Amino acid sequence: MEMSVDYDLDDRHLPSSQVEKIPFLHDHRGEEIFSPSSLRANFIPVGAKTADLDESKKSKYSGMFQETPLFSPVFQHLPSVKAETLTGASNEKQELRRKLVRGSNILIVQGGYSGKRFIYERLKELGIIVTILDGPDSYWKQTVEEGLIHQFVEIDFTDYESIVERSLDLLLDLDTAFDGVTSFYENAVPLAAKLATALGVQTNPVEACEKARSKSLTREVMRDYGLPVPKFYKIMDKDEVSKACDAVGFPAVLKVSCIWLPHCRNVTVRPP
Image 1 (spheres, helix red, strand yellow):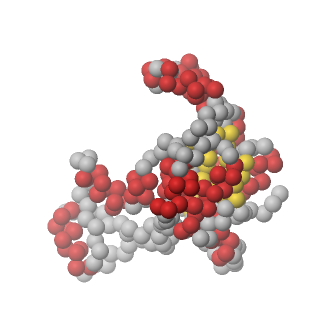
Image 2: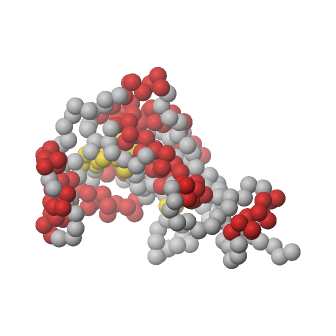
């Protein structure tokens, strides 16, 4: 078995849940376990924003696979399938939904940690053809030979600012029509949305995916659209603390908005 770079699990939440995080350069004993270059190549930096395609390059990818039919034969008849036959809980409807996805091609941008293997095993059982786009030392690279996934696309995440264009170049070489694009790693969701948009696959808006990575931005959007949100105030300077207290009131929760630094976890409030 090849050596692979896997994700750390946040042991503060085990065993009730398993939370992925980019591994640190050193383990809990202080011994180096991954080289800095290996981490950069295999993981999108926390909070990193991938650059959009330059306008001059968008035409290069326009119309990608637009004339390629969906591989699942049932998909071709989807417009004639009534919505009520798909929604709801029943064995018949579940069976129809499974028939619809059988034979479809799904692109997964960063496959997550090895503990998610059971998901891919289930996808294979359902007849879904999986392609994973991930780093050069990904655990999922070896699963092609095992027959668990259809193909693995290797990409170096070191230069993440050019990752969208480089990913599309690799996907274009595959000559595969993807029916869906998703990710099993939180930091890669915006990238997955950008690739899906470029490939013409229905997805959540890129802007929504990027804003959802920030709780303060998410609440601002919800507020602007008239959705119920708790009182909140974004503090950018210590002089704004009193304003925040007046706006939110007490009791209140203080949370650091610092998604780009893994050590921004705790806030200490000292009594006067």
